[in-house]
Amino acid sequence: MGVGNVWINFWVVLNQIIERVTSFFRRCAFNVLSMGSIPIHVAFIMDGNRRFAKKKKLAEGAGHRFGYLSLVSMLKYCFEFGVKYVTIYAFSIDNFQRSPEEVQSVMDLMLEKVELLIREESLVNQYGVRLHFLGNLGMLSEPVRKALEKAAIATSNNNRAVLSICVAYASTDEIVRAVEKSCEEKWDEMNLKSANGEGNDLGKELVMAENGENFITLADVEKHMYTTVTPEPDMLIRTSGEARLSNFLLWQTSSCYLYSPSVLWPEINFWHFLWAILNFQRNNLRLVKKRKQL
Ligand SMILES: CC(C)=CCC/C(C)=C/CC/C(C)=C/COP(=O)(O)OP(=O)(O)O
Image (tube, rainbow, N blue to C red):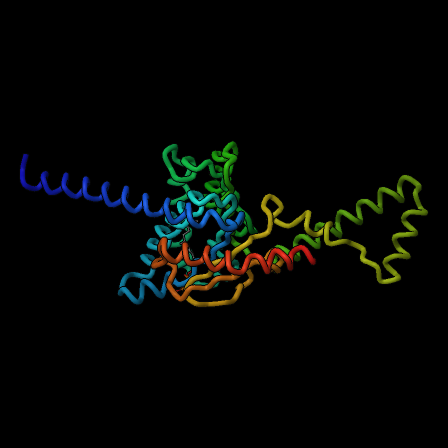
């Protein structure tokens, strides 16, 4: 055996030992934290990828590639910790206004990684995660849309957790669409009543509308949101120190704990995640009370 091979074997074994030791410490830390409340649903705004590339003097696209690695680590920590739902802001409708090269580069990355995520041995299958894509998917190119549909179908039998990936997403777009659908549904219902000669009911509804009562209810709108498969997030982590929602889950986050560490997304690590959970646990009692009052 050459000296080169000895070194390679040494590195492989060393990395395995490091992974086992860190995994042991992770489990210890999780066991301690599990005594407190665990968020059921965590959402991420993965901010700071381009700034990371700039800081490290890398090509812009490299920032998003490193960002993907952080995403995989965060998913692993979430699912190891027992989080059941994770939602990520992968591409906003506003992001389409970036240069065509950048849009293409993120789309290529998404295509490549979604293919990886549905492989048999992937993290998604290891943790039994169903992939759910939400947003105005009609804005995507056909190959990307087809790849996302394929991934959703390939993971549809996984039932231990859900990863919702928001692509071509804007919360205001989601709300407008849900209100439109609710109105259409209501009009159809009224037309049916009128066709069945139930004029009285129809009359009552028109009087209600004239009196300023709601023509459609919160429940009507909620039924048409993209997020019906998940409960509301308990914690939203946005990296790079920004404490804004940037049109992400505006409807769903009224009593969600927002945590915004100053670290850039590709730099986020286990300790940031742990610290986020600790902060969540400190604030959760107050938020649970608030939710009950709503
Ligand atoms: C399979 C899959 C879902 C892959 C997703 C990969 C990934 C990390 C996408 C992030 C996309 C994005 C526009 C992030 C925001 O950072 P930014 O570009 O706005 O960076 P900045 O805040 O520094 O400008």
